[in-house]
Image 1 (spheres, rainbow, N blue to C red):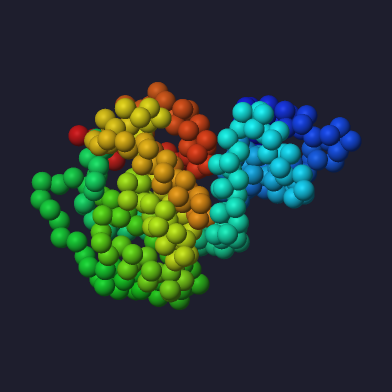
Image 2: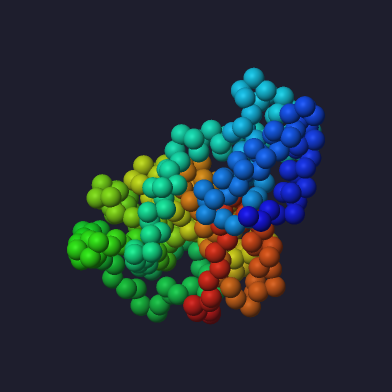
Length: 288
């Protein structure tokens, strides 16, 4: 498994803070624990969040205060990682449960719930000169039930990804998510994060949602606002990622590749990983 260069450097510094008598024992334990964290989020590169939260997994409670002081001396905002670890322990679904949504026999459906949105992206695929009628929540439930019934007769399952537009703009989105949770259907959501607050993230986790796609298209706040046609869009995405992670949801940072951001894909990838999300790039669908 690969490690990000700066994380490997931090790993070495963290080992140096361990009393010499224990280093040979702690070093492999910390590496294994960090890589386990990485696998739990289905990633291929160990990031800083994996490493910092892992050291608390292997450190006995009486020594955790000293560990916290040592990490703070290295310039790490340790309070953020402690909160993340504590809440993840409370809400995180098991890897076995999450992995079921990605079984090779499952079919992933992007369920286009609405044209409505609270942003106006250059690459929007929803904009239309006429307003299209939305299906009701009851109609969507009937569609999902029919699909799932057919798939289960073949010993398969669907993974229903709520999409738009911005699906959280629908007032009845909770009804659809809750129903699928009650039925044990696999589901996910694609959101720009504006309405994906802590309460909504908690609701999604309680309904058994496996993962969330959070959309942003630049690592530069001003540029992201220009691309997405609204203000403070990168802040909204970051908060959504944090809220999802707090409640144990796997997060993909969804970026549309276009001429405006083709030169900064590495920066976008680095920012997504810094937030604790898996980078996910898709080709442009449409551009104004």
